[in-house]
Length: 322
Image (cartoon, rainbow, N blue to C red):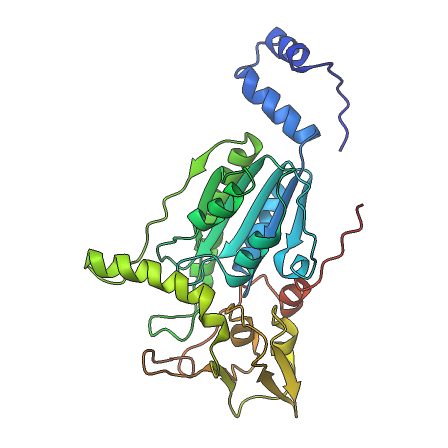
């Protein structure tokens, strides 16, 4: 993007702004510099569309912003950020960051970027993932400048508490998301520090019990969950359409004899894309000794503006800019 205005330096721009008695000169200077020189990269991961929606809407609000799928760039051995501002948008998985986001942070080189923000979409639970992101950035001499949480519809039908949102509920959520995005946009444009309230639904009224689970569950998500065998299955409603294979971001699912097969040698991202985008709701989660699954009794939730093609598209990314 090019500007029709030309200033030799910030001092000259400031003098012009003061001439016209414009308020908050430094803020306007920052805004000018951002609009006409700064670039933003938004790295996103989404299983059922909530985080994809947030990432796309944020891209509309920020000039010179690129949308980059984490599942796609993970295939590269050489991942380097290029933007002045770098953001990470993802869903809350087990109170923490998703498996592919953690793998991405282990590989990405962020040394050329200056400002970092993270946005976690969630169903309302407490979120403990931001310190993990900050820890990875610290290893490269960087830090997480702004953190945000956005409450959206839950996509976990194995839970007894799961319900499919009504159109009215979805509309209210969308309004709240747009309001939150305005705050996020202003924070990024001005490169401000911001720490959102991460509190949310807890497991019990016993503090010690919550403390233990809030640390145990993220550990299990990153070290155990993706390797669990016999987690999903397809029931008699399966038509062999292959949408589950199409949307699976880890490429764990393959079709054999017109039925989905979850390959044991491929880790699952636990994103529930296969579960929620199945058009006949044929994919289920096995009940375990420690967990009863209610998927046969509950509906499904893909984001109303997300399609199977949208989710499948994040598996591929080609960077034509050298």
